[in-house]
Amino acid sequence: MINAYSLAAETLEGTLDETYPVISKISEMKLRPKMRLSDKTLMLLKNFSTINQSILFKQGNSLRTISVMKNILAEATIEEDIPKDFGVYDLNQFLNALSLHQKPELDFKNDGYTVISEDRARSKYFFADPNVIICPPDKSIELPTEDVSFELKTEQLDKLLKAAGSYQLTDLSAIGEDGVVKLVVRDKKNETSNDFAVVVGETEGKFVFNFKVENIKLIPGSYDVVVSQKLLSKFTCREHDLTYYIALEPDSSYEE
Image (cartoon, rainbow, N blue to C red; front, top):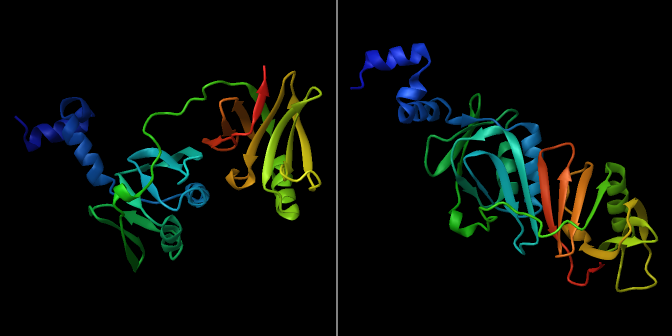
């Protein structure tokens, strides 16, 4: 029989989780209905908003999103523990609401909305219906094959994207030829277009893996890149617990 004395004793002895696991879980939720988002997590969410304007937060310490076209998927582990599932339809608007405060605190006691507050200022932000949000599949993503791998350094990524913007180039190609892997931003439909290339590794293979520049929505950093000839790639960030899966264009080619 559960009574106040037994609960107090179990709490003091540190055995509450073992004897009353359900009560312990409920107590934990009641003690932790509030949350603050770190600058790092806010940075990740800002990046995720460029992939999909909506997001479904899941209870735990993971963030995942997928583009409307389902050709970009991103997932990250964060330091916060999200206390419940909730949907945000306009992620940029949600981030703007948080920016109204210096150190906003989110209160999740209510089912349909969160209260964002700091000192005497507060705002109410209503959750979205999860059914209107395009979400990643629950199962983890695995590359069907791992055919080419290389490291993409911060400065290389920055120069490639800067060149693509300066020359208004639409395509990024990972090309294997003459013993090296090079990344080239170009307009693959125009043989006389400007281009910019950097060598990122060595290879014995011959391939052309094409991406759309608009799909390279990476946070600045260095990445371990693995590419499958089955038209899927994986970019693993070295600075953050963050991974992107980006689809290749159908005209990519790979020679065994």
